[in-house]
Length: 173
Image (tube, rainbow, N blue to C red; front, side):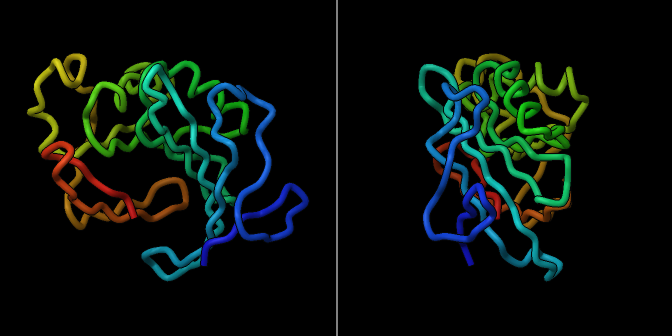
């Protein structure tokens, strides 16, 4: 089941509203989805999209409605702006997940990880990418791969290895 929730709490199809914070970074609307986790429990998960940098790279911030912690996915370019927005939503990063290692998806990793101490996950196949494509050595603390299950910030995510864009590209389910 995928649904959106209006500011007044009602469930509707489509999307709604915009945050008053950092409007230059925020996509038109947040997406809410309710569904079973890997364990079978149901949660209400909020997914926010930030467009960052000159490429307008998609960075996602995801959280369980019952948790203060969140997950940041692909924090490209400047981590300071992303972290400011996350804090504006009242959330604290619990982890950074990377779908691949290109520079426009990893640019904010070091600053966010340094300030929050949160772990950083990437598929090990992307650790051998040419430094010209990653803007230097990729900062990470953990690797993941096909079939790995992560339990972070009250959410359970499964890693699907989907090489193509890079050897270590992943999708998170």
